[in-house]
Length: 139
Length: 139
Length: 139
Length: 139
Image 1 (cartoon, rainbow over the protein chains, first blue to last red):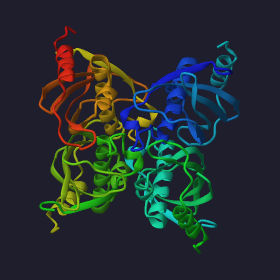
Image 2: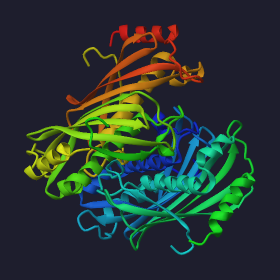
Image 3: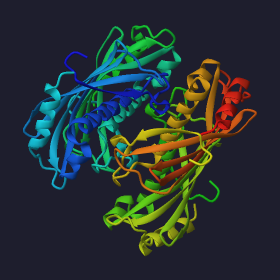
Image 4: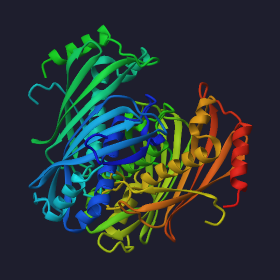
């Protein structure tokens, strides 16, 4: 997808559907997280690596625009990219698609904090570099 | 709360916490829905009344700004109001607070559709009037 | 309910329904936990009190028998009682009802462990006594 | 695994963890469903095929025995097999493992019902045969 170099696949679980017969809108928020975790796994040793170094990444903003419903057992592709990493903050943008169809667009913002004190802590250089490398890669 | 005439209480479930020791950010999206359902129950006969008349209200946008973490077993107050109801669309705004502290701000957008065809369907007059009455009430 | 002296009410959330139009069976497992937490809050200072003293209660068994479907926005009563508390283990039994109808029966088993080492730790006397008092109370 | 001819992999999502730092016990119930859905997809055209023929499979019993905690981002293997298919009922048994370690054992029971009337309906011959073929296969 244009401007995105990373994607992961999710499959809509029955438990994620609701009585409207579609995937519940809160499930999308979990799928964004699944994509971020896979992204960090691919490019930066995994979210656990971040936690192991005494940091947590808190979610400070979530925004999802739903274009089409998603249905049980469908395979969706979640494209994501990390943008605007600076200081103790970074942001992800997402496109969730089903084949050629845009199902949802989203963005999330995050702040890195010390795991013990929960005080904002600059994104470490190794992580910033891993993200820069990931985002400058040819898709 | 200033400008809000309706609120409901939720209590953070252990299942809603995550390994950061706080309520997972996707749980907030569910709490917004709990508040909308209670709002409709109070002012418009309940969401089931809407469904019983052949309509569904789809969620088309969700946006949450997280200001503070929420913790297991805490009681939070979710304030909500319905704004911008027109045609087949309406929007809710929310403030989630813990006592005097602002925990999160949010908004959601919705479209009413026919339950069978999923085509956009004008918000029925009885619902629009119920909302107008609710929102013009003194808190 | 015969033999049960504690109950709490839950209301089926829309997010807890699935594409069968009923509450998803995994939601019941969360409701059992909600009831346990309320029970401990009523009789033993809350689950957080247990955690604050350096213990966690792990869930080692869950068993649910579903008799009837539960539907969106319904109010269900979850009856629960603590049985067989001995050593580092205790067990809860549950009846979930809607008015006079039995919706589900369940039981869960738990082990208390040290929060740091996760080694089994005898249920402390204050908790055992709180439970004994609760269970010997007249309903 | 001895006696099991089907397995699927799941990966523990951050949203599935709780404040004990482990996967919440209700998440396991969802993983069992993921395994059943994959099983039906492999051997019987998918759960949607069952729904498309006017049936639903309700869950009537769930039982999980937790042997070890599961942690964020771990890959677990869920083994499952369909047993005791007769009349309108069938049962699944499961082993959830992490490498050589047994993490959990579980079983679920199900009843097939008519999608409109929710009355018990004999498991159709094509499904019974698909299951028989699956279960008689060499692993």
